[in-house]
Structure formats: structure tokens, C-alpha cells
Image (cartoon, rainbow, N blue to C red; front, side):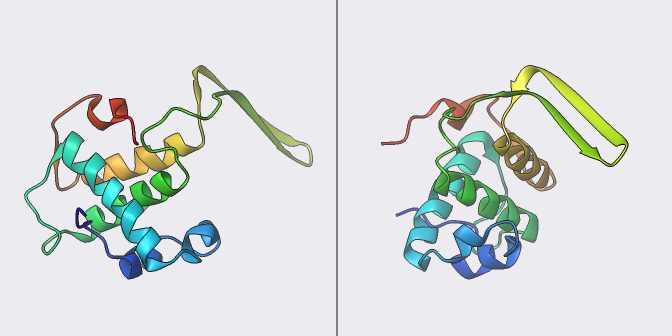
Length: 135
């Protein structure tokens, strides 16, 4: 098995209980499997000058987010519907946003992970791991 940049315990520290409660109840073995898939994604799309022993906090945080996406089965597959618009209201104040190409809520996790990786790594592939199919 591929060793992830983040350990199960480290990923728990990065993923808050309020947002990622379903992750926190998994066994370490299951987390390690999903974190390994997160590393596959990182290694496919980025060149990073670190190993699992020297990974930065940003890389571990990104690996944790990608591991969570693997757990939710959204890392390598486009299996969720796109949202074309979002509207929220609180009292008399409201806001709406329309997405021309559509948007999936998991896109925000991927954007955050890539942003964190961009601090320590360089992009090597535009589509890379996004095109992989998981067995």
C-alpha cells in the first residue's frame, strides 16, 4: 500500500468534527486506505519535493481533504449532479449565485486541496488523476 502524506491521526486533526463527523468514526485502516488514494491524486498531478516523512502541514491537510473525497467516492469520479444555482435567504436579505458550467459541493474541497498543494508543489498535469478510474 502507498504511504500517505498524512496519518489517520493527523487527518483527524485537520478535519473538524462539525463538518467531517462521518470521517472521524472510521477505523484507522479505512482512513489509511483513503489517504493513500489522496496521495495517488497528489503524486499524479503535482511534483512535490517532500516524502511522507518530510511533508509540510499544508500537504498533510490537502492529503486529508483528498482522503475524505476518496471516502465520499468523489475524488476520481464525476458521480454527483452539478448545481446550476444556489439561493440563500435570512429575513429580508437574500443572495443568489448561478454557475454557468455547473458546480458540485465537492469542488470546494478539491479547490482548497489544490490551493494548499500550490504552496509547496508544482502542477504537473492539468487533468491527470481526474481521468483515472478507481477499481
